Image 1 (cartoon, rainbow, N blue to C red):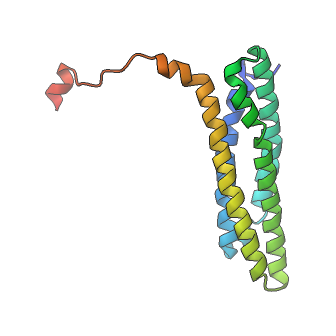
Image 2: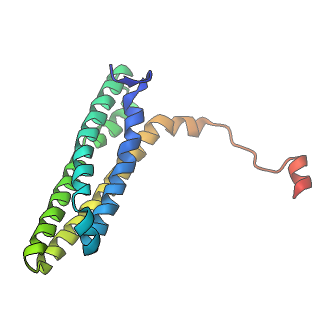
Length: 168
């Protein structure tokens, strides 16, 4: 069973993934562009992205369990297919983190201007593409869960009532 406190683990764990991937992307971009920060924190994205690889894999497993528990409904299919790509985002972030570490160690021995440019481009491309794909995964999950609920919800009347009108 893949639950946490009687709730589907996927629904809870996905929030960590949705926060940690953009945080890792921003940190990696900052490190590749700011050498002094890289000298201090070059190791942090390795820890974050390695943890993300494990967390994403567990989140995917929990999502598969939840999908089976729900009876494999068709409205989850797009989200499940897109969700399978999340592990590649985490792995790409780990590769970038290792490239940043190599850059850090290479800079200590000699000028690494060309390597800095290559790692910077790699970091920005992986970061942007990873965040776009993360958005697509989350959007498909939101639509799977909330799409019909929002479409069928009654319209909300936002006109002020008598008390609110008196205060305005």
